[in-house]
Amino acid sequence: MPKRTEAWPCDQELVNEILDGSREHFEMLYEAYFPRVYRFALKRLRDHGEAEDVTQEVFVTVFRALGSFKGNSSLIVWIFGITRNTVNRRFRRRPLRIEPLDDGAAVEVPAREVSADRIVDARRTLDRCDEAITNKLTPLQRRIFHLKHLRRQSTRSIANSLGKSEDAIKANLYRMRKVLAAASAIV
Amino acid sequence: MDRELAEFLAADGDPPAVDPSFKEGLRRRLWRWVRAKAPERESD
Image (cartoon, rainbow over all chains, first blue to last red; front, side, top):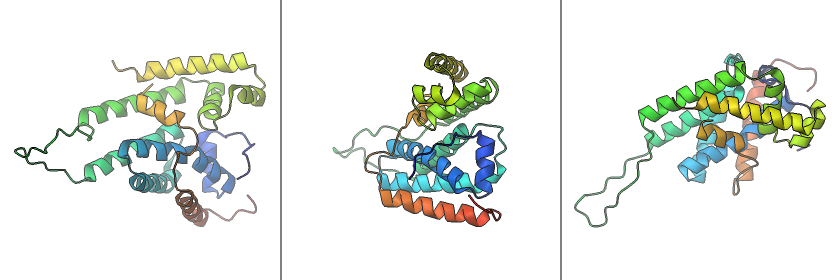
């Protein structure tokens, strides 16, 4: 796969290009998110087969719903939400292990289900992060965010691409993290 | 930042032991589907 040299467009532009049938933009999205979705699923499900099922389900959902993506949220938060919900549904489908209590082999099994409270809290946190990315970051900061976290470019590479100093990029990254940390803080 | 979102963002590179044939197979199927839905393009 040739190294991607074209800059990552904004989310809505990327989506529009994919919907128009751009292979290059399809590859951008797939390569950016496949590792993230797979790793997230694998860490929680601890099974490669299930991680593959979840990854497939997430991407099918993403591409089926791409036409309804209107840029009201950021792509990364949107895909992260789909991934987390898909993993949670997979947990709920797992058969319960029944251990007889009077059996000496019975052991305490830690809960793997996510409680409803945590799901609600997580959703609220996600919404706040999404709102922060969309409304509280400047266009430059959103661009840096994409290049750093989705294109996985180094600070130096980002600085060269944008014609900024490395210090300026680092300062913007620091400010972004503070904005997102404030947005996700549980009150 | 939400811990899970931060983890999701930071994931870098394909995880070890991911089956390359799974990744490529999924890529092909998804692209075929996307391409079938897209309007005719002169070039990519």
